[in-house]
Structure formats: C-alpha cells, structure tokens
Image (cartoon, rainbow, N blue to C red; front, side, top):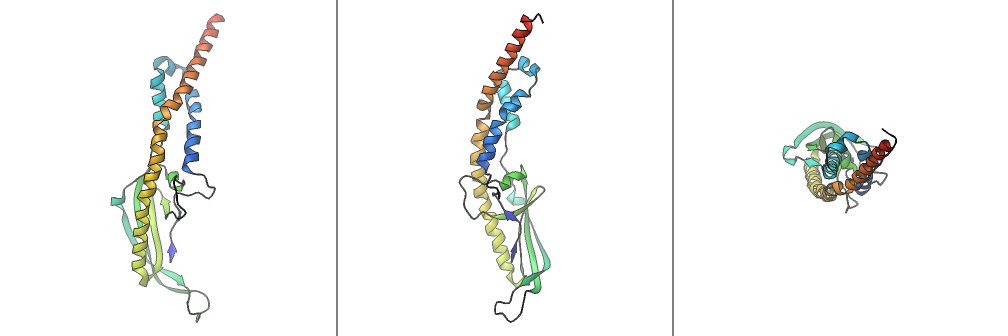
Amino acid sequence: MTVLGELLFYRRDQVDLDAILRHHAELLRQHVDKLSDKLFSEKSDDEIAELVAKEATIKPLEVDFAAAKPSVEETQVEVHDRYGFNRGPTRVPGLKATKAIPFKGDPDLWRLRTNPFNMNPPRGDIRGGNLIVGITVPAQQANEAAKYIEDTINQIPEYLARQAAQIEPHNAGLAGQAMQWVKARRQRLGSAADLLKKLGG
C-alpha cells in the first residue's frame, strides 16, 4: 500500500509554530513604522494598536469535516511476492481511495509543528483549499484503506486544537505588543514636529 502526501504539522527544517509566532510578533514594529503620519493625528494610540493587531492576526485552520468528499478510483499497484517465487514486483489491480476535506486558512499552517507534538503525525496532501487524505492498496485490501483514512482523519482535530491553543493567546497579545511601538512612533512624530517649529516651519 502507498500512503498519499507528506507528514502534516511538520517541516523538514524543524521550524515550528512557536518560531513563526515569535517572528510574526517581531514584525509588529515594521507594521507600525509603515503607518501614515495622518493616522496618528486622527486616531488614539489604543485605536492604532487595535488596528495593527487586527491586520496582524493569524487565524487557525478551520476544517469542515462534514463536507469531506470521498473518491475511489481503479488503478494498478506493485506488490512483492512474500514467498520469493517471483523476482521483482508484480502489478495487480488496485484501488486509490481518498477523502478531500475543505478548509479555510493559511495552508502553510498544515506544515508547522504544534507544541506539544508527537513523532507520528498524520499524512496528507494540500491542494488548494482541500486537505487530501488517501491511500493506494491492492483491490482485496479495501477495508484496510477505509480504516487508514478514518484513523488518519480522526487524528487531525487534536492537532488543530493544539494549533488554536497556541495561536489564540498570540492574537490576544498583539495589541499590547504593538502599543510600545505605537507610543515610540508617536514620540518620534512629536519630536519631528517640534524640530520643524524650531526651524521656522
């Protein structure tokens, strides 16, 4: 049998969700520095910080398991003679079984390791707005294919819950973290205005 897709919630370079969230928070200063001077004259620090936080918010993946669409196709699969009577693999009738599960959110989140994590994450393929879970088996192993797909899909909600548990407090703290950069930017704008006055502007 051949399992479809790569490991989910995992990257080969070992970059995890925590690292991405930390980097994301570090970019808040750049977001604030790019805001127009006019915005600071029109809105309070609290309003600006909330605006920055809203734009920087990361949404956890939303997966619609109820809308999953199954598919089964006939194919050919290679099998090896366990008794050694035949040299090399033999091609036999097989079945390719998949379930396409629609989701909303950044597809890169499927590749980021959660905290906590385990060493045996599920496998799947990300195609557009769908997670594809599937397997190819010899035709007589149809029951094994159904069990694999069911077991794999049943693992995913646990990982999604871990992901949301990391992202939600991160989002909740964005406005507070942005505030320091908002105040610093306003102070710089005040200093620039004062200097302009001294220069007769």
